[in-house]
Length: 500
Ligand code: GLU
Image (tube, rainbow, N blue to C red; front, top):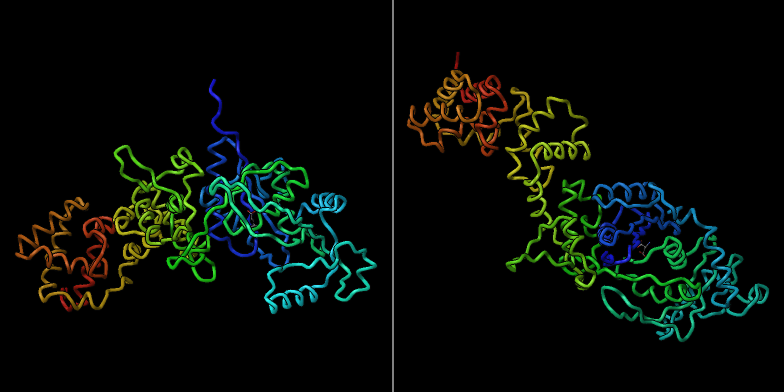
């Protein structure tokens, strides 16, 4: 029997529900899931909701929904359960306290009663005097509550701080970056006055208790890692592997943020009509190389399975990748055209319903979308491009808007063309695209001696209301003979012809 190549990894993504989810959460989740699948391990979702002031109602549900929409479902999490729950930090408060007590008893942590006013003053002083040493000045270290209460800037409810030793190790191993060095931290708060742990304590305790073997997160957390390493040591926990992913960047290299870039919002992609598989493929290519074929050529369209198969942490480029929406558009178009027609039609409908553009769909509309989808798919970039392109097929004949410029652009002999076209179509028994085309060619090109380019223009305007439309004969087939003829007559009447 061959040994498995890797021990099963447990990975997690740990977003804070402080607004609609950031695209970075999906980016982390993608690599988390890939590694868990590659090693036969598990991927966990943990909700880090200890910062009570920043909670946003509904944000958690958006995290659940958008990860699942993207195909990045988790094996354990608040809404799916699991052996290591609860998976919301706010439901684990009693879990953290004993570890705080242990750190206090071992002299690795101390109470701090400094008021927020005093801390603000301290910060201001340090900034004004441009001191090289910043951070907490250890006013409370070694004092009892009574002793501290005698001094100014005392607050009733204390926090607990880590006592960061002088010889703290600032280097750690990262499976993407190798040996990494972070700046020296100050005496970090681990338990807040409201009894909630801070991120630093909770993340270490939870990653340990949840059996996380590989901590994947953004590079902005590198500076926090030495504090976490200390806590792992002090608490006697086995150290996980760290993987700090590069930050996603805008074209001007700035960090992608929800305030400045709509694409930083994970929900935006679904609203816009991107396919989840296209977005996932796009995220796979951020800081990660495409597949190299046997002949040396590169391929960017890569399934998630294939990505997992070849996945290797050391291939991640630590230079922050540019988030290029144009490339995503290109991928989305490709994925759209690769979908079977019926599947694409369903996605188009789902998109219309999701955005609220359509309140409901009846069977007739569903069937119409299914038939019209092959006519519009070639020009689609986003799912939302389909409905406007097929709207003329759904309009009642009498309500079809005739574009004024399109009508005005028609030649003088348009009435003659329309009359001959109508006569040809009325005589057709098999009202499908090929016979329609043959009959119209015979009547207009051969019969009237029109150039094809001019022959069909009045018909197109009559049927679609516009100068440019999806394929004409196929559109007529979908409309059917009665509707097609009615539309042509209507244009004829508008042009002042066809009396009687
Ligand atoms: N709650 C942190 C965040 O929202 C998690 C960081 C980590 O993965 O350790 O980014």
